Length: 275
Image (cartoon, rainbow, N blue to C red; front, top):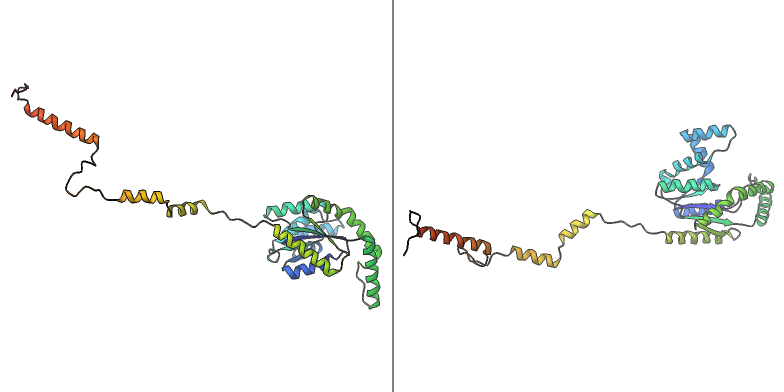
């Protein structure tokens, strides 16, 4: 099962991804984690990404796609995965489709957590107040100003993905403002419907096997003909059966017999003897 979760920052993608990982036994793949792992492993594409990031540049789409391609080939991702933070743009989505198609795979569902931005900002402000009341350290994204910038970036870059996947008929929208259990139940239903609509694999019988099987089971008409050919001749042993003689062969024997009789009547002089 291969899933994509879309939604602005604070929509609850991380919470829902944890539930899907636990329920379906698939892995959550974060673009940031994949980049750091590739750099740490010093793979060729990881070294290329490290050099780009060291110059302060953005890692181009083709490099990110290659890192994702290497990651989904690992054993823990063979059962399925959730992509977190990728794709971010339509070109990345198109590259992902091509990469999966080369491996005879495809995305099973694209789930958008739709939220109201004003309500989302109020939710963040409440979370900040509760965190401070407990005396806990605030997260980096627990800042309304930072959230405003991230929402603007989401609208500019990622929202076109919604239209891209809607045109493909793959997009399913869930109300991200509902209570967490209801959001979880809605996502589970979307996944269940997507898997039910997925065609089951068909396996054609090899031609050679089919031919052999047909040879082992002849038709009743062919069986009767084979039995008739194997029947012994009706003529008794030691006697010639006139019934089985060929008409051409019988005529030839009559002609030979007649020639012998004529030759017996002729004298040595070549004249026929009168009786």
